[in-house]
Length: 77
Image 1 (cartoon, rainbow, N blue to C red):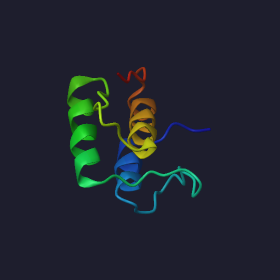
Image 2: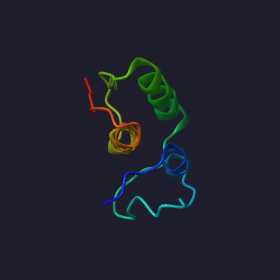
Image 3: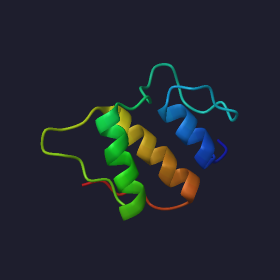
Image 4: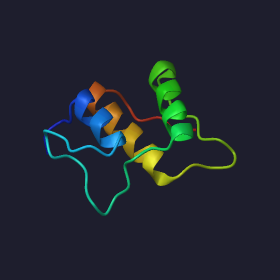
């Protein structure tokens, strides 16, 4: 599998079609407004901090793809 691009991951998180054809219809990727805020904070910090109330699996899916696009390790707390 080829490494996804950062722009493809952003498009996927908004529910748009990607150029690299990454993602799956069986796996959720579209983020809500609150999840988008957590995702943007994770990109700045370098790790994903999941709130106590939890978050949908979509957030971890997108952040995992973002880490693959950046070539860094996936870290979630």
